[in-house]
Amino acid sequence: MKKVKAKRKVREPRFCFKTMSEVDVLDDGYKWRKYGQKVVKNTQHPRSYYRCTQENCRVKKRIERLPEDPRMVITTYEGRHVHSPSHDEESSSQASSKVTVFW
Image (cartoon, rainbow, N blue to C red):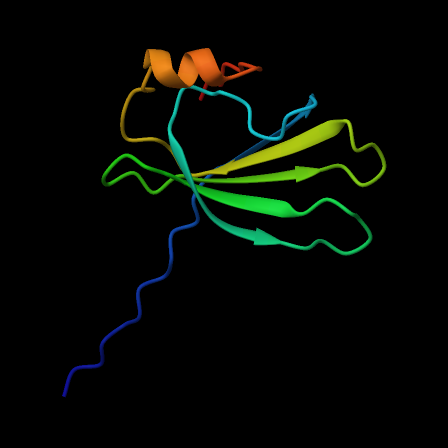
């Protein structure tokens, strides 16, 4: 009988940045679906979890406020998009803050 080797999970690249903003979710040109929220110790602001809505794209986004300075938003992306940003007018007109992310 052959022994089957377990596949190692490939770790996705992460990109993190801080922004001073009154809104949590910044318009980065992609569409996201919120799939969770978690209470973070020692802060009154929860951490939110998002997935890209594009089919076959496995990018995740995590958003939280800096405990020392709640004006600062920490956005962490995990993975690389397999598609171009979706620049539709509906999401652009509703966004109060825009951000351009270069990979």
